[in-house]
Length: 535
Image (cartoon, rainbow, N blue to C red; front, side):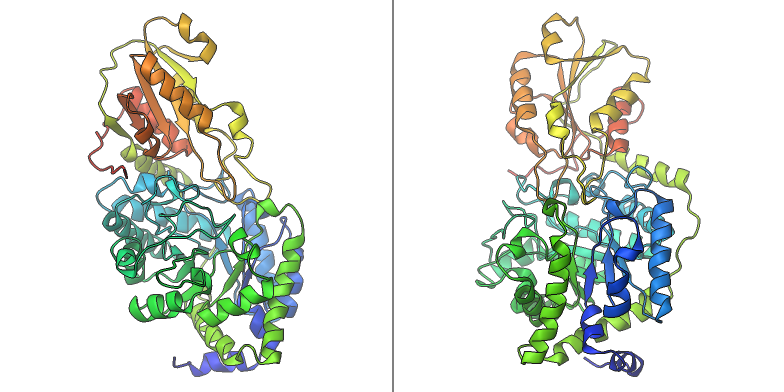
């Protein structure tokens, strides 16, 4: 790799501690930049992972990002890479920002036009907040509908179609003036486990990966994606000893040499269970760099519920320094990573403009249009007539207990999708009545709308067993039953008796409102032609 003289000159002025610090993207708690100040000033930190915990509103985000920039400018530091999980189904500044319906809903369309528009909206809003990198799009393919962590975060279950939308998302991010990161390489959509908890194992050959999981990543790379985020998944037919984040075969031979990616390879959070349950912080960090990781990310994982992640940050940084001193890690490996980081920052982050005004009303219109386009009747389309709607939330209240978490990672949606659906449905002219299970036997003639939803949560599950059992029972007992699925379509595979299934492919508020509009007869709707259900 040829190093630009300007880049080499910058690196040559740094101490080993400053070199190592530039390799890290770290999280910190709360809304004050003082928490991370020592890392920026003393260690020359490379970037920050920011979540809803660091800012609930645009005003708080703008204040924080300006504080971070001010700390760096005191010592003439390069800009911090400020990354956020604004990917649709997961989001930041949720409640104010325009998340859109999420990738699965966007992926219903046969073209990438609306995906491009939605990602441009997200890019412009995140730059307005002061961020410079969206840690998306998810390039995973929903090959396993039972995956506990991807689901609505993916564009779908057909590799070619996911590839189309992944490329469109990258184009939209660039049109919106921000950097993006394809994830979770080489694919998290065919796992039975969640890397927040364990190391999943995917027993596929390289040819199978090329035909399925890798196609969206190649499309994102061809579209010019700036970063690729790795997964902590073991692919034993490719590397029997190391998960992808720690695998030289996967990162160097596959991603760099075969697929031609020359940008920043960023690790998924090294605080996740897949790493911390199997490796010490220092061992994981050194092995990641040797494998080809450019920047090491440590998110503030919510399930930790302690300040131990701060100790892991120091342990990884000092572990790398100790490895260099002991001769276990060649400093040239660090310098090669730094050459990419510094060149990237000079080319992309230094000239990036932030804080420009945005059109929130227009952005919301884009989001509603995308949500409405994803509404799909699966199996049959009912003749609704003018009969009343009786609306039943299949999800028990207890299932919502972890809809938000203390660290601000995940959907960050405070209100159930059901609440938005019922409110929007009640604004129509048709008689609408919310009911409970105990009231079902006393209802008059009308349609029973049973609402289901699901939220992909990091390291946790959104409990669905009771809701699924209820839908299964009612599908056999109630003739005029409509399942309003504010979620992915995959649970339909378990409902052989359900005739009318209206799927939003999303649990976001705009998707819930769009579903209500469909039932009130406002927009035209699709009949399932663009949807694939993995069997």
